Image (cartoon, rainbow, N blue to C red):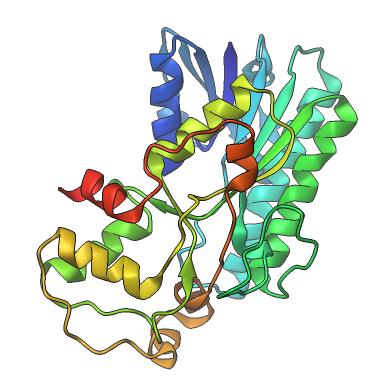
Amino acid sequence: MRILITGATGLIGNELVKLLLAKNHSVHYLTTSLSKIESKPNYQGFYWNPEQSKIDENCIYGVDVIIHLAGANIAKRWTNDYKQEIIESRTLSSELLYNLVKKNPNQIKQFISASGTAIYPESFDTVYDETTTETEDSFLSNVVKKWEESANRFQVLGLKVCRLRTGIVLSNAGGALPEMVKPIKIGFCAAMGNGKQIQSWIHINDLVAMYWFAIENQLEGVYNAVTPHPISNQELTTVIAKTLKKPLFLPNIPQFVMKLILGEMSYLLFSSKNLSAQKIMDNGFQFQFPEIKNAIADLYS
């Protein structure tokens, strides 16, 4: 197949491209940087600029599936301007793709979009699945709603639309985990708040495998991209420390301290999302790293 990917040079996109090329598929990718456009066997870059509504229309030539990963990093201080960028980086880019597909003859069958778990209510005990209609009233929840609405528009064009609501992605190449590991390595780390907040997570290898699984099985609808074994922040911090053979003796860090440092973005550290992975497993997906100990050991042993 030929697959068009946005966000192909990001943490998830980079690993997904490796997997698809290893399976001998052809990858087209979109980039806002002319210097990042490459042309190799089965790997071709194309320029786009969603803010200016510019896109190289050749990017969809012969494409079977679009995977939309592009979006501004949420792990930055949320000024009002940056909040707007977080939303527009997801919705404007999706709208540009929609208009491109709509006005050009194509053979595209499926549109797969990244999404977020922030849409779910805060929970410690209740486990939420994809049938949940109750949503959280927060900035990030609103981002996810707009993000998914923009993805669902592709159904009008006859495409199968799949949305993967992704939890905390564990990778040693970027994302949240290396930032947690840095202070632990030098003996300065502690759980956040009371440490009881639930972290629904997924190993990077399982996540990219899930994207391929969605393509192979032509999945439609929404799926939680999380493992079947969420853990508390305290447990996650402890497992990392034990894997690195480092002591963990500092008191937990109060929420107000992190809010002073990070502002509203500190929400990410204290949010509790207890989510089910049953739907994707019922469809036949098998996790390589369902347990946190094995996942951390694979990344840092």
